[in-house]
Length: 269
Image 1 (spheres, rainbow, N blue to C red):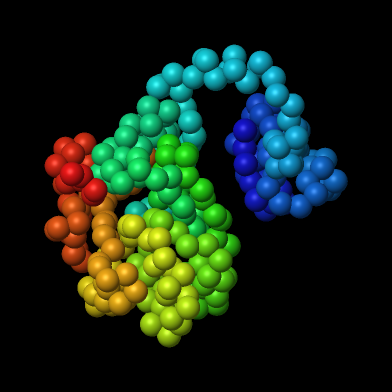
Image 2 (cartoon, rainbow, N blue to C red):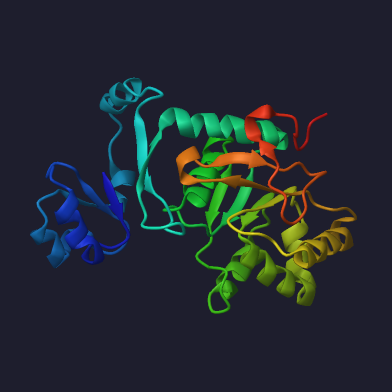
């Protein structure tokens, strides 16, 4: 299956790379079945709603039974920060093993299904593998944040955080920088954000130490203690986690040790 937000922007790409006209194209937005572009593409065009309306069938169980660790779960493209984006094969084993690694580090997840408010894009490994995987593996709730860590769009994130208190919160450094500024100015928002927060995590860039210190100070003000902040290093090719820093050693610039060592565990007795 090929999944796109809208059909028109990807018409040429689909026709260029999809030589098997039996592969369906699922479109997430709009009334795709009446889109004029659909008539130009040989593949079946289906709407996101059709996935919800699909009747239960034993065919799903048959297909599921054929899945092995070597089955390709997705071809995920790199972000392009180190050159032209390239498609990376992510197998079922890679993604499942990575969730076990994450679970060994974030052991508190076994005690309570996580509640997440997350904007991170699914076409990147942080949002699309790490965070979705955490929600699925631990039976959590993932609230889709339609905001972004920019001055123009962060107001949407603030509205979402005012409605839902996360238990774990993932973001990039710019997102934490904007969040700290608003938490300082809005005590009601801060109380909501910290109400059940157990853990925070950043990746994709370095977090300035003064932002980290401000977040610690706010956590102490509203909860009486610091909320663990952890970071690590990952990439699309590892689906994505490779290293984690422990709570004790976490500071700006530290990426930690290989996750499978299991030496540093958040919530370990």
